[in-house]
Image (cartoon, rainbow, N blue to C red; front, side, top):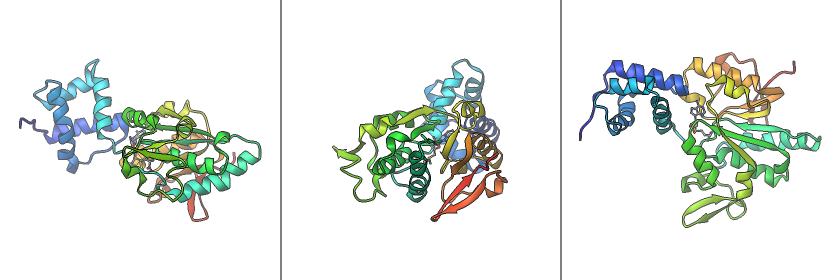
Length: 273
Ligand SMILES: C[S@@+](CC[C@H](N)C(=O)[O-])C[C@H]1O[C@@H](n2cnc3c(N)ncnc32)[C@H](O)[C@@H]1O
């Protein structure tokens, strides 16, 4: 099969372009991995050199859209229902429901929601607690393709691998081998495309009582993660909470948020001014 060589130099400038657009970092040892994704696109677009393809992505008026499509094809959308569910339960039971009972309408943002399993899990938990209508749920991702899937309510069987009993049949059904979430849950979420490395796009979303940013900072280098955490911190209401993945920690970034444990779940909390 016809291929194109990716020199270390072209890899370096392409990886920098991708990182600038998405935050996602490729280390030199990922050169082949990146080449596998880029080469077919370059060939399809009629290029016989990856350097020329790079110039197209970077400078051509049509390049920006092609770069978005390339980035989208590189993103890892691994997720499933009830993944790391304990922090979501604690958030719902200990913080959101009490806020609703106190007459407030809390705002929660799932900031890298992939195909939607994370915010839909929270929606299921809130619905069980009778509080879904009282909580504003926003979910976003950089990937237009993942969001398109999320909005359909259709998921892969792999998304069901950690499903607790009682969910299937009540909040989702499997039709012809395809799990489908109840439409009222999908409708309860405001789905948007937001790039986490775009601080002004984040600032436009307003403030939140809780932000879920789970299993995405791992794709960023420390400087990028630090900038993303800073803009998420600005988007938190006073005493608001940031939740990261259970294997992630903000401690090495020197965050202004205080880490607190609640019933075995870790929350990063913003101080009152
Ligand atoms: C592994 S999934 C995590 C999904 C979910 N939060 C979870 O924990 O199951 C990572 C998601 O981060 C998204 N992502 C990567 N870079 C992003 C960026 N700069 N802005 C927004 N989302 C991004 C990817 O598209 C992908 O859907």
